[in-house]
Image (cartoon, rainbow, N blue to C red):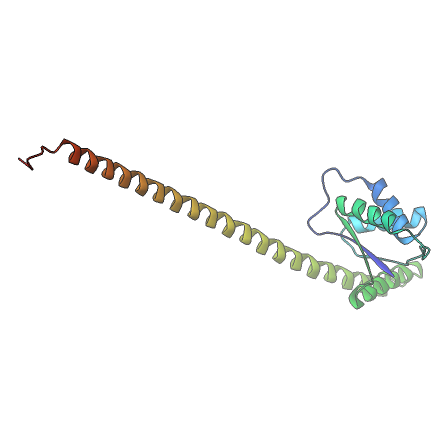
Length: 180
């Protein structure tokens, strides 16, 4: 099994679906429609679990290129899926089956479970993004503090140098016989 997911930092502005679909096909060996559907679903932020159908003799450089292509598109393909992802995929499939079988109450219940999971994931991602922003603010404040300290040091050095220059000038202008 492989899993495909969009990083929660969002898609790049120049996101191109076709290269992403090609890379997913190359990495997993799945068909065009399945790859297109997987990329479109992953674009919504959902984790998509895919069966790995590629031949075992796939060349490493080609695989590396495909992974890099996905990475530049803001996507990631990694081997194995967590238990939670398998369960979510099973719930998603069960909701589709319940809807197809006109089991409305069950489909609604399963969709509510999926929605709650997405809310939890979104909240976790928001907390992560807040922490990242706080770290950026702290780093910026630290840079500003260092710059201010450097400016104070430079001003002190200028004052010290000016005082030393004045002292040197006073010594140079002192009459040889001492002070007046």
